[in-house]
Structures are given as structure tokens and as C-alpha cells.
Image 1: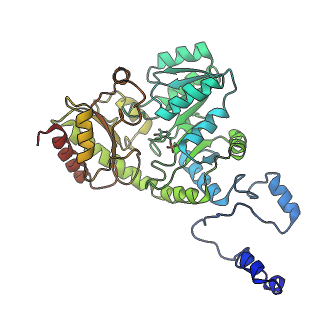
Image 2: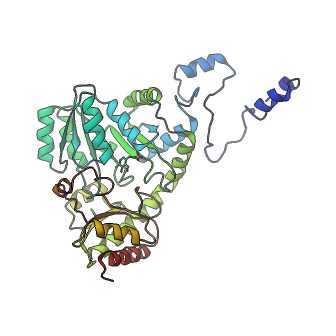
Image 3: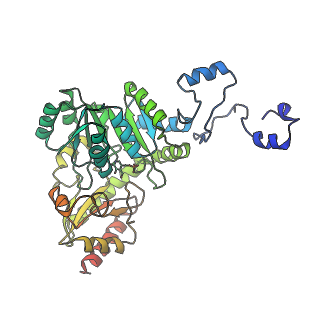
Length: 404
Ligand SMILES: Cc1ncc(COP(=O)(O)O)c(C=O)c1O
């Protein structure tokens, strides 16, 4: 506030304006500040006019763009090697925006049968009601993908790099090749696999992350982002602006801070998960372990092709031997270090029961048909000491199976 301007104002006016709109600083903050303001000011109204017209790097209203959120979007471009990224208020709103900007009513969508539950529900519910033809396929069966794509000529193909909860890995480059035959857009949800693989380098146009998971990494932010081409950015930004599901500045800042340690965390989580998976594969109370880093996993070869030496992710699932709901509940209750909560990708290890959470809308028979047994548990391996994680799972398994 300019003291000359305000010197005759009443305290009621000075209280409102005091301390605000300081002169432009000569220093540069080392860390991007959180810009909470909903509106931005330009001394020159001509400049404000260009800002309202959408000039690059100018801000007028936070729903149209925010400097803290732009900083996060620039970081996501680094992560995915894309020209553009648009942040949203959750992983689901990012997926919604990516889907809605790629199809029109009547269009066909070919989707993986293994998608995250809410994504599947959005496709089979809202998108069908909206007039889209949605067909699900096993994206590991490339012949089935090619057949569905040739028959439906979809506008959009959707899959995940690593699926939940069986950790099946889709051959994304092969799916892009199939998509090219009908000029379909490919959307890949890479939430489980940041840094392991960059789908855009193989021609994927829309790469989605739930920032809530590995990128945020600390269980304290909900957000999503679409990394994309320069061409698609405009439409996605318009969708964010009109739909309004933008990521707030504080959440953007948290996700940006999380991103700084993503390479360190991801490396440690992959290393820990490999150690934990190897130990669980030998455990007498476990009949089967799903981890793409294990040579026994059906996706091991695809995972090696896609991830090279970057690791196989931090997600594991396993079946309690002869276990069901009772043993799974007992296991979750007995955990002391691993947190029994519905998320993943955090610094601390987490475990959940898919039959109770992500796949609860399916019947036990439907779950069995896609390989999800009633004794299947999922663990998101954190950055703790891997031997402490193994010891905790071991004691909880013994409690659950009453064998200890
Ligand atoms: C693979 C995947 N995609 C998307 C989402 C949705 O993310 P959010 O909860 O941030 O909306 C999740 C949430 O668990 C997920 O696991």
C-alpha cells in the first residue's frame, strides 16, 4: 500500500489494504511462493487486457491460471517429457478432463478391463449415459485390443501402465501402434509408475497421474494432472477453466515439493518392494505374490522392456494361503508399522483389502473371474527399512492365520 495514497484514509480502509500489493521485489525467492490470491493486478490496463485474452505467463484469475500451479505443471512436463501439463483438483478430475476433451457423444472408447474402479465406473456410467460406446478388453491381450480397435474405430483407448491390484503391465508401445491404425488417442494412467516409464515418448497423447499418490508422496494432498502435447493443452486448459476443477495453489505447492524427492523415494520404494516381494514369495502363509519384478509374474518381460533398470514399482499384492475375508481383516488389524489405509505411493507403507475397497462393487465370483481372490491383500511399500516392513507383515500374517 502506498503510504502517500492512504495517509488520509480511515483505519477501516487502511486495515483492508495495509501490507497488500507491495512493490515488485528485487529478490527471487529460492522456492516458488504459494500465490493464494484469486485475482491479479496490472498497473497498465492494456497489459491486463492481454492477460484476459490469454497471454502466456500472465495471470488474471486463479481459475484461469495460477503461478504456483504453473510451476507444478512445468515440473510435470519435466517428469513426462511433454510440452504441456494441466493440473486438476484430483486424479479423477484429471481423468475426466482427459476423457471429455477426447471424445464426443457417439464416439467409441476401448478401455482396459483392469482400470481403477472409479475410472471404470465413470466410463460405464457417465460416459455411456453421455452417449459413448464403451468396450472393455484385456489390454495384455494385444490381439483382443487390435480386434476391438478395428471393429469399433474408437476415438480413445484407455489403460494403465501397472494395473491394480494384480500389477499387470500393459505393453504401451504396442497399444500405441494399434491406436495409430485408426488414429485413436491413447490415454495412459501412469499413477503407479512415475519415472519408471514415460508413455509420451512412445506416442501417448494423454498421460494422467493422481498427484495424491507417488508425486505428492506424503498423504497430504489430493490432486491430478494431465501431461500432454502443446496442441491439446488449449482444450484441457479451457476445460479446467470452464469445469472449474482446478488444483488450488497450496495443493500445487505441496505436489511441487513432493516432486523434488520423487526420484529418491521411487528408487527406495522400488528397491524395498523388490526385497519385500522376494521375502513374501518364500512365506509359508502366502500362496502367491503379484510383483512385476518377480520372474514368475506374467508381466515380467513387458515390465523389463518398459522399465529397463529403473525398478518395478512399489506395489505388491499377495494371497493369504487358504485365506478369505476373516484372515484379511485380521491381517489388517494386526499390522503395527504398515498403515491399513486406502491410498498408495506414500512415504509410509500402506495396505488395503481390494475386496473391501477398490473392487467391492464386484461379487466374489466376478472378482475371482479376474483373478482377485478373497484372501488378496495389497501393499504399497514405503521408504521405511525393508526388514521392518517384512517383520510387520510376517507377524500380521501369523496372527491372521493363527500360525504364530
Ligand atoms: C490408478 C489410479 N488412478 C486414478 C486414481 C484417482 O485419483 P484421486 O483419488 O486423486 O482422484 C487412483 C486413486 O486411487 C488410482 O489408483
